[in-house]
Image 1 (cartoon, rainbow, N blue to C red):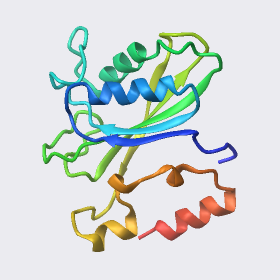
Image 2: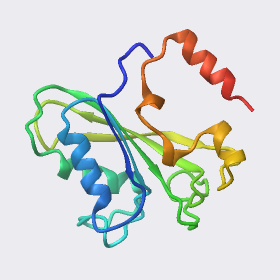
Image 3: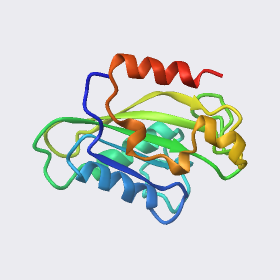
Image 4: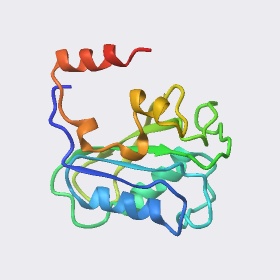
Length: 172
C-alpha cells in the first residue's frame, strides 16, 4: 500500500526441474526493477541448484539462490522483490512453518532486499498464506484465487480503501 505495483512478474516455474527455480530468480533479479516471482517450493532436489553445505531449510536454500543470482546486470538502484513458493506435488512438507504443503494450497512469501551492488541480496521469510478449500474444482478455485492463473494484476497498487474492500470481500 502506498507504493507502485511491481514492474516485473513471473508465474511460470512451479515445478522442480533442472534449475528452473534458479533461472526464474535470476530473471527476477536481472530485471533490476521491483518484481514478483512465483516458483515451486524449494525442497532441495538435485535438479534445483548447486547448493553449498546442503542447507536444510527453504529459507537457507533461497538465500543461496538469491545471492548467486545477484550478479548481472550490475545493480544501479536498491530495490525490493517478492518470491512466493508454492508446492503442488502432493508431498507433505512442514519444514518452513509446520503447515503441510504439497497440495497447491500453501504458499510461503519471502522479501528480497537487493541493495546497490552484486552478490549482496538478502531474503527474509514474511509468512505463509493458505488458500482455504483450494482444490482442482473451479467452484473452489474461483472465489479464492488460482495460483496458476495469478498475474501482475494481483499485485498492482491499491489505495487504502481498495485494499480494505479487497480484504473484506475475501473473508469467508
